[in-house]
Length: 112
Image (cartoon, rainbow, N blue to C red; front, side, top):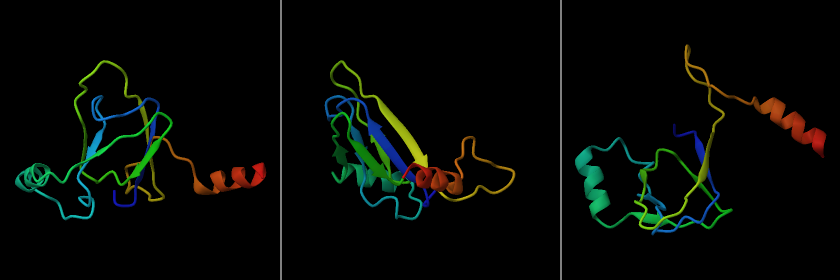
């Protein structure tokens, strides 16, 4: 998972009051943490609220500890969440949807 990049495309404004993403910076680099360490980090006030306007994007490592805040006002917080990687899965696992890099590379070159 450390070779995966998550892309979050925001279709609506995502502010603290309507459930913006919260993250604990640097936790994607830490060794596996237990519940006590996670609660300590969260309680230390080190979380960051990621407010993003409609049309904005967040790029993140999906191993980063993250959660959505509760919504405190009516409305939407629609997000398209995509994950990208070049790694292969060990057999017998396989990706449900996969675009080979060569195909993507060839189509980009054909366009320009």
